Image (cartoon, rainbow, N blue to C red; front, side, top):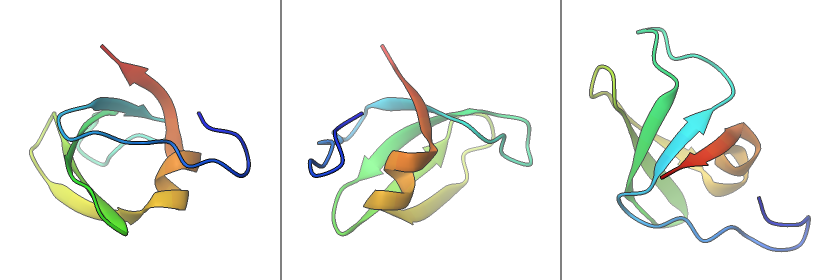
Length: 65
């Protein structure tokens, strides 16, 4: 991820693995929309949620290919 003073540039369609498990059992998410809040979609159940950029940067474990 980016350093303390840099923001990681998320891109729509990018797949992320988060540190915590979603209640449906999935760890993998896809970036849907970029803005002040970032919308991500669970690849297991399809649920979408908004997260502030800083919170998402802390929650990301890996960026998948």
